[in-house]
Every structure is written in C-alpha cells, then in structure tokens.
Length: 113
Image 1 (tube, rainbow, N blue to C red):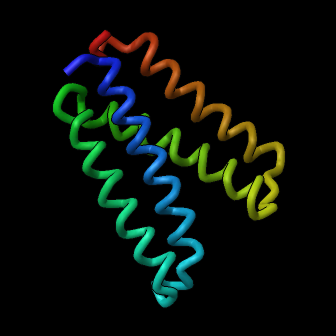
Image 2: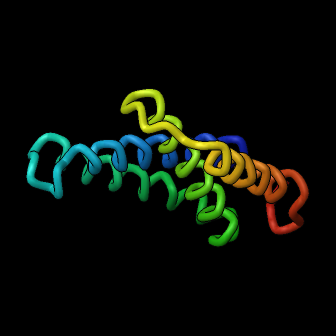
Image 3: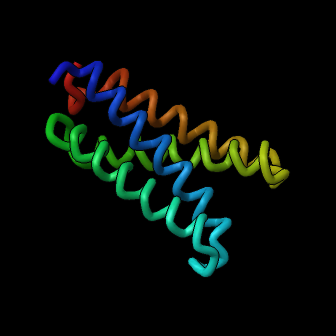
C-alpha cells in the first residue's frame, strides 16, 4: 500500500475519532441514543482506518500522530462550535503538539519516507 494512502487512511481515522469524541461529549454519559450510536460507530471506523497505518508504521509513531492531531482538532471543534475558549498557555501547548507531530514526520528515522 503506498505511503500516501496510509496517510490518507490515518487522516480518515483522525477525522472519525474527532467526530466520535464530539458525539460522545453530546451523549450525556451514553444516555442519548443518537450521539451514543454515532460515537460508537465513528470509533469503530477510526480504529479500522488506524489499523492500516499500523501495518506499515511503528505503533508509537502512529499513535503519536493520531492522538496529537486528534487533541488539536477536538480543541478547535470545541472552540468553534461550542465556544469553549482556550487561553494562551493552552494554545501554546497545542502549538507544541503540532510541532511535535511535524518533527516526528519530517525528521524521524523511525518513519518510512
């Protein structure tokens, strides 16, 4: 499988996880049916796509990318859709997460390039 496709599938896993986490936050402790089912379905899709990246890339690297970008995107969705503002230290921390993902992808010899 081409590396470009692996990154597309990893991106799809991240997107599905962001939708799932957003739905989970709206499920009220899994007591609301539609958001609960959406969360469960999207988590299943996220793990399915994630499994393709794990075939080619080291587990720690895949998880670092998946969780790091997921954190940043969830924070952005929460800010934009739910008006959950972030202060300067939170934004700086999110910036460091992005920087870390970039360093891993651009400079690590652990990554297939």
